[in-house]
Length: 392
Image 1 (cartoon, rainbow, N blue to C red):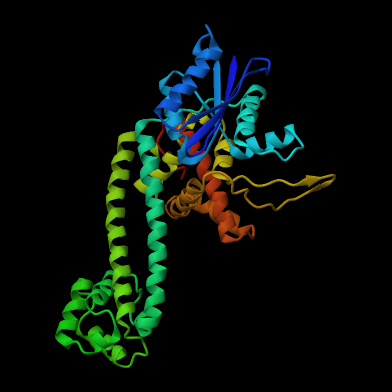
Image 2: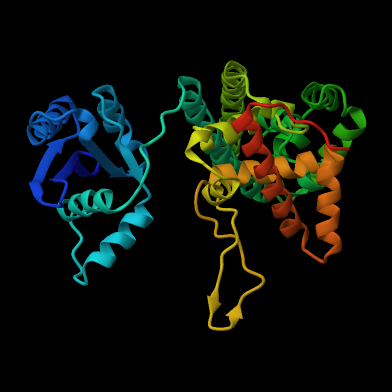
């Protein structure tokens, strides 16, 4: 068995190859992040293998986001099963091996190879095409929602200056009727000088008839007495921000359709859980990847960062400790959202939430307990491919 440690970077990677007894076969190989560089790595591994089978190769690298995606795919296509290591584990292993403050890419590659030699890390489990696509879609959706949230905050900031009174006249400034109004009339001066019949038509069309002449009169009166700024520049920025919000919303609708199609293709039993939508099911499936990576529900809990931290010293043991919150932030968010929705629709989960609340726990703490219970259910359903069965 030979051990290939690879330190991944954006433009180039470093590699170290160790023999079965830890002897250095190739101390330092630097190759580019392109086809030619990958072929150089393959040639170096084959040279170290000599006449041995590729099954005798154990290659490993840190989980470094998208930088390692193409390299992992290349290794798989050439008959290798790479081990993807947690960067925190690699960092702690490096510190345990030396007291020197040495941190270089070449040294990291050697530590990764040594870690493969001494640990029992499993190869990176391959996932289906649909799951890989789901992860792209759901991560993209999360980024767009975050961006839209920032734009909505920016819109609120602009409205506080341009037309602060408007927020008191509608249930939310982030509704279609408000967008429709401000795209047509972006400041109080324009609204105050607008004919009442035109203003009525604008807000009626934007609200699908919910708002009429009475609301139009109310808004125009507030605009006439407004202390807001009539700056053309701020009015333009307000309209621009609204257009960006609308464009992102359109893209989110397209993404939701893609996510739904991908979840349908997977045929997951998670959709039988009451309250779990295509979007939540898609996020959970995408973040878990291959359920075969986890032997117990506790491992899945740890991956989501929902396991409790522990602290013990001498005779002291802490009783109330927070979640570690390491692992997939996206999975943890999806599980907690699903826990809230499932507790609203399933009596078993609702009773469990109520029980934790009666124990004096804060709502969010009680909800996290429901989330842990849900993770155990999800683990069993994915392992056995069985549908959800209500217990009461």
